[in-house]
Image (cartoon, rainbow, N blue to C red; front, side, top):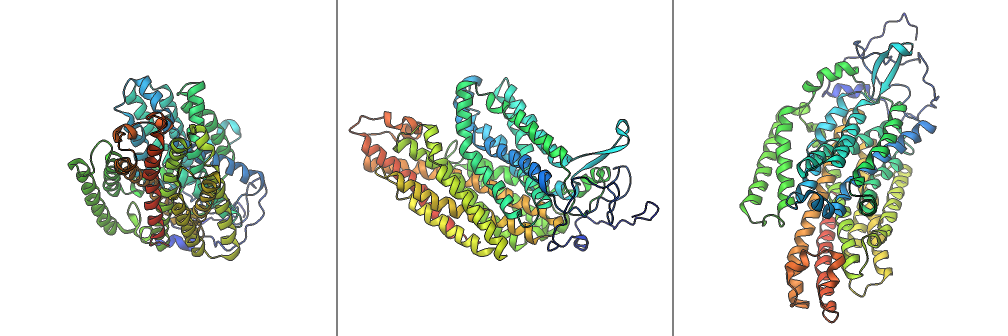
Length: 568
């Protein structure tokens, strides 16, 4: 392209299906990419200073290869793993937090303050990723007018995440710590879905399913290793190091993402124009309806059965308010059409609808098994927290194996539904087998059951994301991924709450049958590692049998829900 030629930029109408005409065909094989970007590549609309009026367009460099690709993947994996860590490590340090802040009344808010912004901001993050370019170009007079490119969208969320971790580490009081958790949640809202969108843009199609599957597996991996890491840090260095540790690891991630150029996959305006148009590109009315609906739902499932009875006016009012506000949000979305917070084409797309059901069920299954199976190891087998975490490795390893298997099958056979169905069936069967655990179960039982459950879950959990990546246009990918991520987080929150309700309601009946001499409230409020110290040795078998029955009832309901999932 000669410098004196006229460059005509296509008209971009955000929220319009006219963008489909500009999509690069996914079937086109990626071209080899040189590690250096030519100053004036052929057939490439220039990416220029944000002050000009030209559009940032899809480039010939449709994917990355070699060192740049794997460096970027490593950085994204670290970020996703940190989110998984932050979701799980708090449970281990809560006793130390309550001692440090001299209060136990705020403990519930430590998790709610983190979870609420993650869920509430998912659609808004999707809109931001859709509108904003992956890089901002600014003039650098001191560097010979070269362009320095910053992947600002993802980095902005990541910096907020890091600032929240810093606020938690230096918090002098419990309210400040809660604010820090909320800031961390705001940043985390854009990391999982943003990472998946970047993977879709940067990875060659032949390895994209495997890279996506590995990224998704890092959330449960963080869930398993989080309590172990937090326990070790809190015991030897102090609880604040559970949050200080995010800063150096996060710095490595930020450096990698800044250093690697991410290809654009859909036409977007330059940074300054996109930033000025951002308030008009999002849906404030939809957000003001969506946010309270999700907040009310999360408060209801967090408080129900713990702070308030499920039949209390507070919980019923929260559920009713959530339903009413969600109906209003749906009506507004129908009116707003493609300008809605979650565009109608995305909300009603079959892949998104059924995929959301799958990730909600499997995400909830992953969280419930990761949370309650260690309780079985600690209470029934007398394991420490570290020992219980190690015994979850069969589930984690088999889950990764299932993800890799499904990724290879999808890539080789180009067909998606069978693997989601097969994975859900295996997951339901394995979860059903977990209900047969007893005080006499051997290592062969709990290892084998975890392998079946984890392998099936791994096959099913990533299929919706892969299907969306391979089937939807580039400009719809961020919103669809945000919808799936939202349902995965909600499924996890609901699964944990329902599991806790089943356990708390099952303990009194089981104790009345096997250990009538034990106070149910005492068992519920005692840690799993200390449960065997509540009674004399001759009373212990009855207590363990009652505890085992209450725990395995959680897996019964979980298996039924997965097996009857209409999305499969």
